Length: 166
Image 1 (cartoon, rainbow, N blue to C red):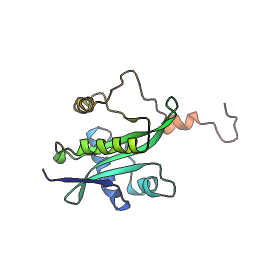
Image 2: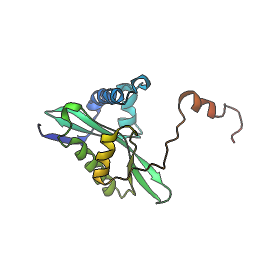
Image 3: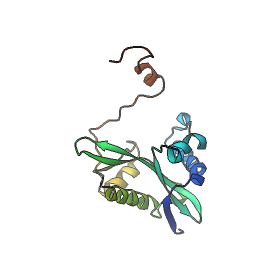
């Protein structure tokens, strides 16, 4: 395996990140839900008010991995936290330490920023990832479930214009 290089994403990386997101969606069997494009992602990474950050992993100048993350907050700790939304390494570059390097860099960022925790989710069927995360020392919390409103359910939940707020 060739050596890799990690760095913060730059605007020129957005199309490569979108390509990797497409690969990740295929791996997770969720391609049917994908609406991301470079034009949609770019402002959230590099616009006037960015809400996400990303690291990329390169081999021979080609982006082959990424980690997309953002700041969340723990009311119990009264501190921000780092939430990893997605991490993906192309299959041909797995086993070379890129995933570990990305997670280590994110943990370092959380410590440098004095965040209270570093969190992410993993699909329950992804046993390889779960074993990998446990070997790193991460706790997998089976008692927590993700709740989500999206699309039509989110629109139905939102009060209509001019209506009263609960």
